[in-house]
Length: 440
Image (cartoon, rainbow, N blue to C red; front, side, top):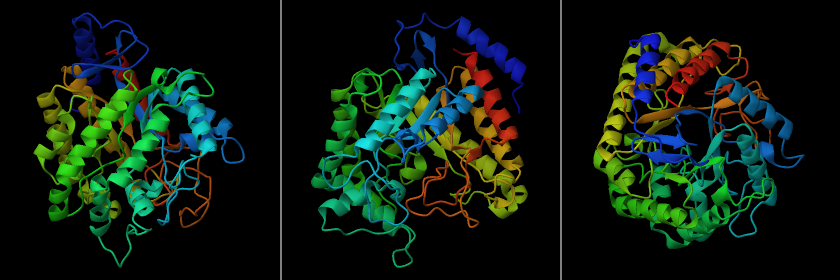
């Protein structure tokens, strides 16, 4: 690292000591300038993605609450204080979409999964952690926006990675969601139900639940795939961002709201799109995702040869979004970042030298921003697989299985998961957590 950790700790401690007087103590995470506070102290995000938490929290035989507790204990032991989880899934005809789902075309919603979400939030809160909950998905693996469209258009849809509908047909099809009032109306009905829910375990309304840090409009929403379609959909997309954020804030004034967006890579590489999306007063902080392999910045079969170029592009991408956050005066969370295991293997026994190096790159950017009063407020790695293991030699997921990993059903199981046996990666996460605690 270019910043010596000991020097960093000293500088961050000095920054914290000279900071303005803290805001009044609150059990809820608050945005104060370009940072977060909780209970009167700075709250840097040391986070993980664990999309499947509600499925583990559901009653048996669907759920596995003992495993949920073990996984959260493991994360807490690493110093993780924030978990980003899926709070929706739409029963879908799309290939590789998760089942069971939270909802179908009409209520009632799935009581078992909603109870599982209650349990997950109760367990997260019991450990002093917080959760970010996303309320739908642009992509197919949890049903998402294409499924909402199928509910109202007579059952029409496009499958992701269908050779008959090559990229970017899927994201272009999904972009019609924003301008379809019936589809958006169904989504908003679900938002009202979840944000307005009362937790059956804690007895608290979700709007009064300290274990919730933020509501998120969707996972990786974008106006479209192609330039032409994305530009046409842009006004409806931005109106959807504004309208949904306003709806959530009308239901819940205690919690933060964010978009769940990737940043430039989900905004047609247009800085004006990112700025408009996050300038809304109801959007409390910016998000960015960094995926060097998915974006063809590195080659999984030649990580040594492609690392330098991919690392430079990753640093540039983070810096661009840090600049957006400075301009808007809001925090930025690098809430998804992932990297393959050595040789592109999916097996837990494969080494993670390059993955660990990438985690260090992201964490260094966050630590440097924290040390200098910058707006990067934390990071959530993708994703915690814990004790989960692929059930098949091809590392594929079969519809209806329940051996959840950090990799959603459409991906090879083990692609980006951090397993409970990944000691070197866990050490890097633990070091990051220790460093970030100083700024509290």
